[in-house]
Length: 324
Image 1: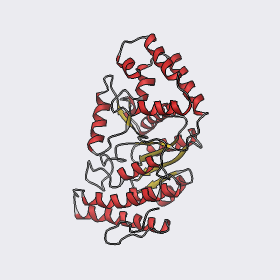
Image 2: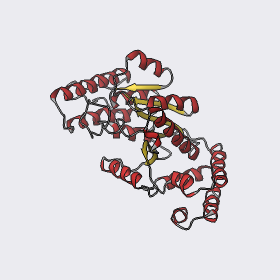
Image 3: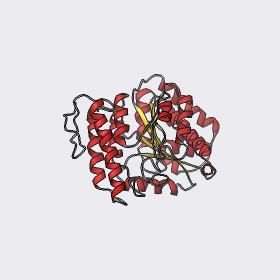
Image 4: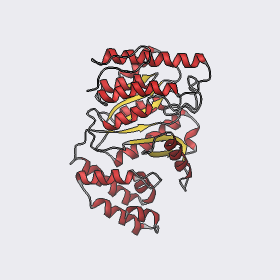
């Protein structure tokens, strides 16, 4: 019914009908409904309902107030995963360590591990949302194209929140637009924690600091894919704020395990699939390949040291310990 109203007539009567449908649900059942709406693979997801189909500020506020009130009645210990795209999911802008267009090895396994949580027994799945500074459009064509490119890479179930043309001009504007988008998203799912994945090239570090200030206790961690060789001392300063830099998604997954965000089995999968992913990269040069294999092996060795029971085959970089 909500989908039909989104596609149907315009006007306050339609928006009030959407509001009444949402307000008819409460507690855990409301969370299930929101997740079901958000599982759509087009622009008619939950963000499209509340911040697209509903234009009237009063009606939208009534919806958001209801979502906030019901979140207080249902304690959810899981996190919604918010991820950037360029240089976080795909090598596209500042990163020269991989050929352009490469989907980073191990990332899909990490998304899956975060979605399944620390016990591999999740309350909900499909908790991945991409936030980008790329501008949206009235017809949703850019968002649809973004979803299509993600699906081709193997990311079939996710939401996408786009930016504006203005936000492209500076890193501060990019961070500001993404912050607004994440604030909107948290308003839709206030019962969940947040985990953010970004990169060090386009304002995501600024955004992570703002998220840590805006959502203390709600932001479980911000993981920054370092594409500009940030010095170790600077990384340590950010780590104290809950913002963790990494060179590979093996390193990211190890930190996520230590923070209680993914399971031991999830960490094993990231290590293994990172190695498999390296084999599938069409490297630009032997030096480029050698550098990344060395970094993945280094982080796999660190994972073995950090997690009792994991051993890593030195020739393959894959875990040989049994998952628990």
